[in-house]
Length: 246
Image (cartoon, rainbow, N blue to C red; front, side):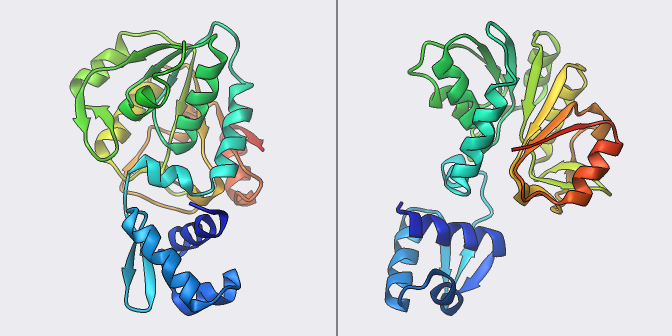
């Protein structure tokens, strides 16, 4: 995927649906080029073509999600890695930014990584990192492990810091997930009362999904980029959450 196609995909995911003519105006290339890019992105499974437009896929596929705002997520992952000490044991729950964090930490080689994400375990399989993959029911699309066995594993394993992925945040709902079973796993992690860090790009602020993840007060720190909604960040600070803007 070239930079122009990455920009197109980001616009499609931001707006959920966008006209070809709008993309021509924003990107500054011909309609023929835009259609060729959309055809390529559809064949790769990143979006859906509709008449005269492109529509976002509602997907938990992490390969797709990693491509969106990749540079921002990589920058956040690098900053998050600085929060982890040598020889620390961390739990990385899931999400695209957290997958990049896992890769940074695994390449460092001085951290034990616990995860319920088969995707993350696979991503860092060729490193020398000490990896503990939790058991549970395998979700094919999101490549996460969920259910009672995963909860039992979390309750009986020890770590000092947890990194959690979220799908949305709103003052009225707190942090939310589109997946009820993953939200249950995240809430189990929060209940351990360790240093709980939410690593997310700014696009999640203002979004609301069906399942609430624990309570806002259980979050120790939120690391996000400088386009995050300032009112939401102020609200988090008022709730006692440390906010770091990268």
